[in-house]
Image 1 (tube, protein in one colour):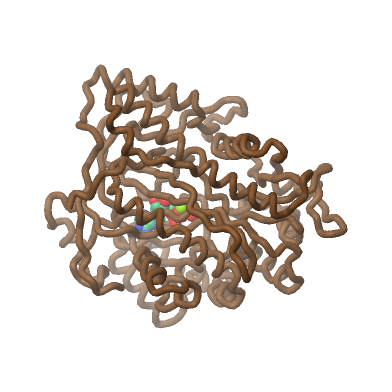
Image 2 (tube, protein in one colour; image 1 turned 180 degrees about the vertical axis):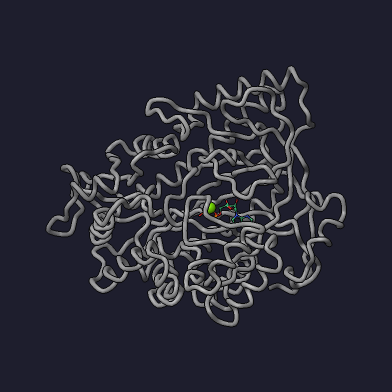
Length: 513
Ligand code: ADP
Ligand code: MG
């Protein structure tokens, strides 16, 4: 960990003076909800699913303040993170070494790894991969002027200055997503809702502080670039989707945007089961399904065990990996995005192998927070002891994606007590809990009558990136845009689709200190 003194900076609590008058709030909330719903800030309901009915996605009424310099820093680092993930994905030995204990006990990761081994030994038909990556970051507000954050007692934090919860020192990475990195649509539309609200309230001069966000277009341009590299005019882009898609607006707007950018490209949607039933490989390993040749596969499914109902769906994944289609992601990219690999990357001196300049290495190291393996060795034992003694300082994570899988607070103790003498523990990682600064605002939820109250909120910024290349060459590497998810400061997780988090966007302010 860095021995430089961490300096704290202040953050404003809201972009306009709150609270709003009752009559103003009543009117603007109702209007903003309709605007959001009518412009596609919506999803299918999980509690009352109807195929043809959309429900409003929860959103924050006004954009959340974020220091401009920090936003720019997060954006600037993305191409380096893209390059890092690309290189890690192509490092067979590193992936194998990092995941070797995990695959002994985690069947899902083992199934993915088995496919990787098959492709690695056969040789891939398609050497290019498309990475549509999202790096998720939170500002850290617990910034002691010491070089070891873990030495700090939580009591010290409670007693620090009144404003400690509104100060921060640096970004910390929550995780990096290499599969189904969603919110390319819901990110930009969140700013559009909030622009509408600020305009309706007469704050026109504030609109310039909401940064442009071309995430949707950028992600689609990445897919189109891959389609062009495949170089077959009649070939399609296939979205691999869940059996039931709740986050339908986010997915469909990608589809519509591809059509807007290039009318010649057809997009089809298929589930893993449909691929299993209907796809086959052509003479040159082309992926053929229902009369179409597939140029690019964009995975919005396949990242959790529930998506694979039987061996059939695993066979479908293998078939796709064996094919000539450009996968987003290919299997090695999927594995590079696992939490175990994230933890292995945070080990001292690991980045030196992948990043060329000391500046790039330092900038990535700076956003890594403490990540610890639970292997059966001296480090793993130490991590278990730390977590048992101070569970509130950590998050315990299994090898899963999609939210709702992590363990927090005292539950960490219970889970560790159960598994600490079993091999299962090696499939988990321990991570320092990030403590983001609070901001304040109104959270608007669907079907929630009554006026919203001002609540304490915390945000997670996601920066999108695209990368295309093979083991030797990177052909395309871009930062594409962003998304902001905000939750109550009291919630552990912030899934928008599961109704805990809300759509939001940054309101850029000059640094206050
Ligand atoms: P998933 O793959 O399920 O999205 P994440 O690692 O992103 O897993 O964790 C889910 C959520 O849990 C995050 O969006 C964030 O709100 C919270 N979270 C995860 N790691 C941390 C952490 N180290 N500190 C604080 N909150 C965290
Ligand atoms: Mg996540």
